Amino acid sequence: MAQSENVIGTAAPFAPGHHNLTAIRDALPHCRGCELYQCATQVVPGSGRSTASIILVGEQPGDQEDLQGKPFVGPAGEVLHRALAEISLDPAQIYVTNAVKHFKFVRVGKHRVHKNPRMSEIKACRPWLLAELDAIKPKIVLCLGASAAKSILGSAFGLMRDRGKVLSTPFAKHVMATVHPSAVLRARSHTTRDLLFRHLRDDLEAAFNFSRHAA
Ligand code: URA
Ligand code: SF4
Figure 1 (cartoon, protein in one colour):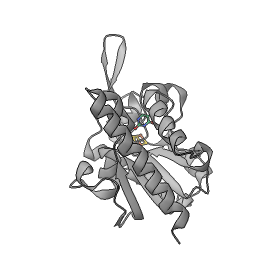
Figure 2 (cartoon, helix red, strand yellow):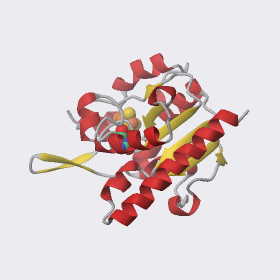
Figure 3 (tube, protein in one colour):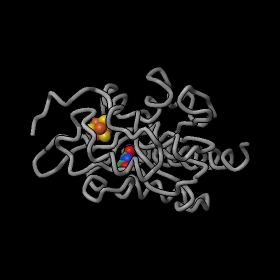
């Protein structure tokens, strides 16, 4: 169903005025803030603890997440859960969401191949992320990969230069960025894969330690 007259370039009018996770979850399926709702199976809300002191922000749902309606349940989720296990961080303690809430893909034969969201789509979807941050009020936000970093830290942010640093922005008082678990999966050599995985794990650990000690 093409409803281009409904595409307004921001989710703001669809987000509830009162930010709590139930209201956000109820409102999300009605979002027409950008075109991505048109081809996805369903919207994928964030999931996890409503009083979490740390929020992880991925890019967007992948194929499995789109089908199951939950974030990080596919191959990238396996990498993330392995990193969490290595630092003994119980996934039930945290909240996990995405910068963009609908899956963006192109069909190649039988497969749906992930496409990076545009900056306009990341911006359009940002009101949902900000509503989640306002509902949960975490001590720190950990952006997984460049798309989440663009949403919270702006398009000039250099991921490999500034990953692992606690920064402050108008959107979040304490924010850090690290590599995306999919980057670990895409690495072309064992050495790169191990290095990226260590970055992910070490940055997760640093962010988690910060969240436990921050006022
Ligand atoms: N990659 C993401 O960025 N988010 C998911 O939920 C799954 C894969
Ligand atoms: Fe709304 Fe975000 Fe989905 Fe676009 S991607 S329709 S802004 S929920």
